[in-house]
Each structure stands twice: as structure tokens, then as C-alpha cells.
Image (tube, rainbow, N blue to C red; front, side, top):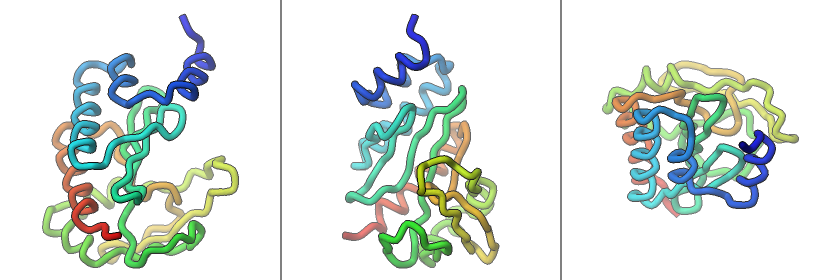
Length: 178
């Protein structure tokens, strides 16, 4: 049996596909199916998950980072990156300005409370020099000290919540221009 460090080292060497990793994991079949369904949705929509770090897969659309799937301590998370009003390569801007079209879409799709309930606050991460909490006003509500690396985090989403997540990613897919 491999210890935790051996498994981590193997991931660094092999950079596994999420489908392979999840299929071999200890999650129950319902959770595996939810994760695999979302990974399939991402691939079908040209947002394939790519290994990013231990138990973490990023996904991009048109070279724009739009989210992560992370597997941590028996839980799994989908981190969503909210579209900003203006493109900026500056990582350390403390205030996020949301695209008004995104707010309109989210309101129309009844996603406002779902978004509010899943805002990802900064927990003073140790990601070497990158921790720079953000402030956000969305749907007229102020949020302070949000994580710089994904603004929303959905923990252990159910199949119904997965459908809501797909709506959020459909918005990004249809509104990212390059």
C-alpha cells in the first residue's frame, strides 16, 4: 500500500486525468458519477480539466482560467472564477468589478442566492506570495476578503446543484471573447 507522499509523488510524475483519478478514488459511486458527469460536460464544451497540482484540476476556455476541481480530505469542490467587467492581468487588484451581463444572466436563471451562499472567503492561504484578498460587490451586496484564486466555491454539489454550475459555465463559455 502506498503512503500519502508516494501517491503525491506519483501524481507529479503522471499528471493524471481527473477521470482516471476519480475512478480509482475512495468516493462512493454517486459522488464519482457527479464528478465524472461534470468532467464530461467540461470536455464536451471545450473546457477540458487539466492537472494543476496534487488533487486539483484547472479548466480553461479560450486560454482563460475559469475554474478548478479540487479533491480535499474526502470532500470535493468546484471553484468558479467570476467574469470581471474589464480584463486585467493584474493579480493583485483588490476590487473585482462584475460584468453586468453576468448579473442579469444569473438573476434570470435564479442563481443569485446560490452565488451568495457559495462566496469563497480568503483563509490566508500559503500559496507563496499570491494571497491577496479581493472585495466584490455583486447584486448590490458587498463581500470583503474573498479568495484571489476562485471567487465562488461549491462544496460537494448534488446532481441538481451540478446543473446550476453548468449554467454558470455556459455563461462563461458564451461570453469569453479573445
